[in-house]
Image (cartoon, rainbow, N blue to C red):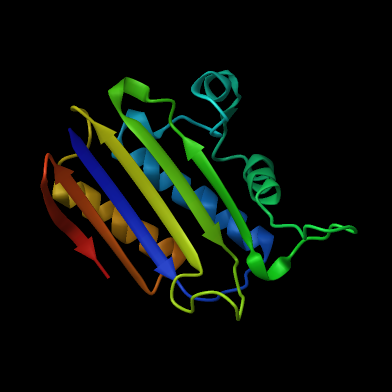
Length: 173
């Protein structure tokens, strides 16, 4: 089993929704560079069956990406329920285990709260696992990692590959 991970972290950074939409579109386009398993995404469901039945996300459509962010807002628990803007936005995607590569992507961004960690309020995580079919070229993974970092401007991050029990870092900030 081979596992690939890319994670980025950054501190408080309130950003306008439209800015986040443009960044996400650029980021999702970069993921396509990892190969066919990273081209088709759906929202995760409560079960695999539900997720597989869901619509495929068009990562170049600003309206679809905007809706992902809007569905991922945090709301107060008690009436009247209102959005908590300092908690930003989040969403996750799944590649439907395309070609035996099971990949998930999640992001939390636009967070700017004095009550949360000051170095990891915002984060991005791309994880993929497969018996084969994952990019194993360190240079290709490093290039995608650096492009992700260019889009999101994190304070720290790491890309790594794990084969069986052996893990090695491909790139780090």
